[in-house]
Image 1 (spheres, helix red, strand yellow):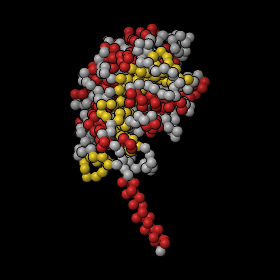
Image 2 (image 1 turned 120 degrees about the vertical axis):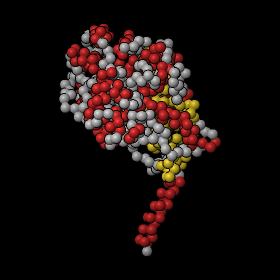
Image 3 (image 1 turned 45 degrees about the vertical axis):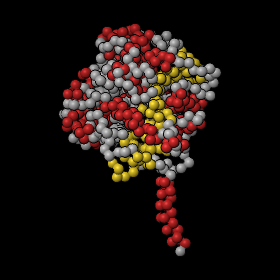
Image 4 (image 1 turned 180 degrees about the vertical axis):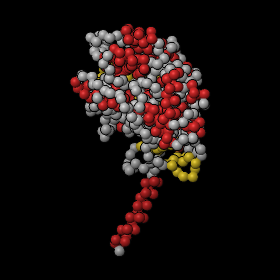
Length: 560
């Protein structure tokens, strides 16, 4: 009898426990769909998580390579899906090969020989129906929504070279958000997916003539930001206090929104944190056409119309192949491209001209050795010259010659910031793809900008993400390069800066050891140096002739 009673309790009590847990998870009605916070296994957590909220219709079938449409109404069930959802992914195999050799290089200083023969596709994963976002809201905020509670909103736009990444790839924001609560300055956190690779950034004359949409990934981001404007009040968020932050391609995307339409399109946010703002030089018309044809070839079709009729599996594989099998900086390079509307010119050019959303406040930031993981290993002048021709497909011979002979001359005594060809190409790529974007933003925004310079060894690209999303259980580096244990003090300071900026528009932490208020970027290019050896104020090391030249846009055929 006791056994029977226990069996009955296992069924009934289990259902009761599930119902009790469900009752503790709030439900929110968005009009078109109804969502319930996901079960996280511990009801004492300080945040509710609403996972995988649909902000756009599935971009599949005839909606491929078109602007995302509003989601259809579906009120037949309450949505509560904790699954990890990513858009279709692709990773350059050459970059993986190079990065895997860098631990030895950092230990010995010997530049490895890396072969880029027989490159293969990687990351044939993800799903096309991926336009979702997550909302994490403090319980105390959500529980007082009916009383008119409104707090600032912090929006994460992920990076990944415009070919990979997702809203959940870089770890949990809980420690970051808990620090904000500890300072009695809670924020709501939103993270979003957007189309990447061939799904989000395919281009070329034939692609356009067939009705393909340029910069679909950027437009996805804009749609998600519009969703926030329309809906974040339901969670207790203030649509008038939205701060976007992102790293690498996410931050490069934000720069494109800041300069959208040459400053004529108002961004849907008030503040921006630009962590290593990265984007690639715009490709020549021929390179874009080559990339388009390569993708179609891998999909075994000859037109966008045919591609729209294919299965997701076929297109996901073609996307991964077109990215993974490409030689360093050969076509395709997916990313933002001029479209005559949202993207007119390189953001650096718009910033230099004063063509941007000047009412914003920003933090601009970059790392001390961004380029090391972004370039192939090279050993000779000829290889350096070939790299420039590949990555600067719009540049003419005289421009390439100026870079080679004057801007980054073959002088290896350390006076130019490098002692080997590999350091030379890393410095060039770091300046071109990231550093000078950050410098241009700081100079343009001036007194409305703050800045930090992350130099904790080795200071490589994406290393600071382990600090942005630091928590004691985090895995550490998001790179194949061993960057060592996270310095907890530096992580705490950076998280204080991020959360505090979203609330107050300044950078402040009781743990940074700085006695005075951190000044604005202008007029001296002042930044906070975040280093495990100490935190101090410095002058931006990127304020030099090189960044002034890159900001001119000459290499893209335009001028500031």
